Length: 541
Image 1 (cartoon, rainbow, N blue to C red):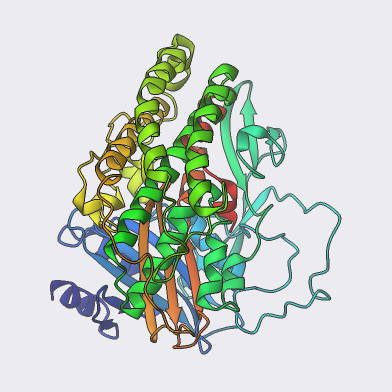
Image 2 (image 1 turned 180 degrees about the horizontal axis):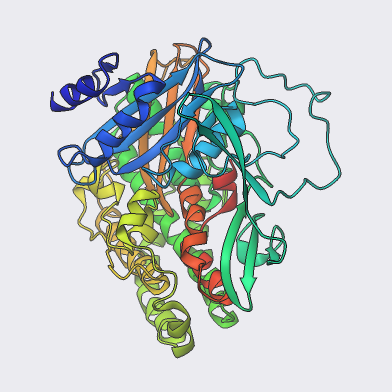
């Protein structure tokens, strides 16, 4: 009630739709005022922008943002729009929530909405010479409009900003990104330390980093656009191709979102098995993190140790799912197949095997003086910035932010198991490293509690032959390996989603690379990137 009164006082023409998560719709004239009220009012404190989704609603273009208060735990959707399809413009909120910076660039890239006073209105994923805006419903996708180009994209050293004059006119200003005399080097797009096809343009003064300009989109595949032409069961396959090291988690989130919308309650056996597979996936991912970081920093022996042990996890997953990387297992209403009869024995063996190996990891790498010197007090992310930029997962918890979805919004059977949310307060590279190492221990502890207690029952429930979600919008998220992975679905009651948005934890991780590396050495950029642990297909989508 207080929320509605506050909003109505600022924007009398705002509408509030009640629901599991209330939706506030405001015209663009009051959008910033309402956003500032939601963020700065201590009784509301919506300091975490979880997900910003650009939409084409036919008669209007706009954005709908899911906000959460880390103080009060409540959530709200904030929606605004413009009816001008020729020159769509909305006020920026990138100075209110840091994560809106790249999110608004993404909306501009795919829908053409210019955000007034945003500092950098360049495309984020597509080429600068791309014609049209793909997420518009009237987009022309013919190859004659955007033919295959075999030449390199132009690199821009200026960034446009659109500013509103006191008279309401919009003027364009060019900001200098890199001066002519700056020494700028490219790291990527083909570089092992970028952990995928990602390009950093790095301005250096000697060995010291002055600025990092992130260039994404080298493996953008238009997954969210593709989902608009797929039935709901067909969209499941897309999740495995995002963060492929968190394939179980991603698909789990989409299944939960669809099941919520349909009112489907899966059997207890399904919840237990999904939770077990999620934790095996987390073990696999964190072991790969350790291996890759060690290799990035020159510890090749450690790399082989980590991959040796990750193979044991993958063998267990493969036995049940048939896949090692792409996990085609969770489905709407349950699982593709029951857990393999031999998996219980193999999980128990893994639980006994890994703790001594972890001790060895710490002896080989964690306690090494070179590793400690290169990780401690390097790339510090404050708790306030972690929340503002939406840096969830191990990187956020290393800054003291309690953000584990398994604890705050339990799903599966996480409310039935005992485990600690790992928190460090230093916010440096070493803390990000240690959170993941400690989470391996907690994943083992969760598996210990579940492996002998899987209830009997079905591994799936019957679902309609043609799945149509009721009209409305829905959101669910899970604690993936690198942070909160969320799925937003807007349905018009059809068998295809009207809009499907994936909340990428890795986009937020990349968004803080500039601030974490500035003033550090170029070698520190590699270590910082390794401890952020982003996976490029997840941010590119």
